[in-house]
Length: 168
View 1 (cartoon, rainbow, N blue to C red):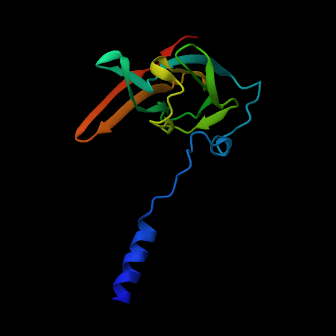
View 2: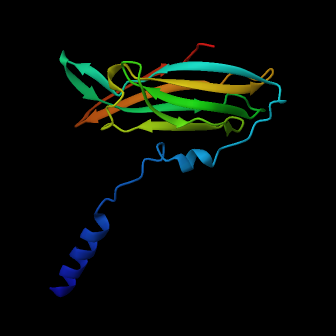
């Protein structure tokens, strides 16, 4: 009997879920990708706008459904490293919610990195968005920024995507 109690206690202790760190918010994770760019480098500048939805309306304008949102940042070049200079998240009213990074980071050829906005984080609201600033070598394809929004409840799931638009 004591053996069964011991096994049950061990199973209970190891099955408890620990709270995981939101790695997208941790500046140390972005600083690992930091790189210093020289002003003499011949790089082209660009700025992209990406719509993200941390909430959508459900049934009426008075009912909202929370979503997990992912901003996917992709280097589409198979030869060149690209540089992302800033990723800033804005809410429905155009107010800055947070800057994920405001210094150059690199993406190696064909590399992807993501920013994940947890389902419980509704600070962006129904019209949230990102601004990304970037630099690329001459004759390099532009980076691709996509939003992937998902939610599951019971046996039903919801998912959709958005693509960024270059604004500068």
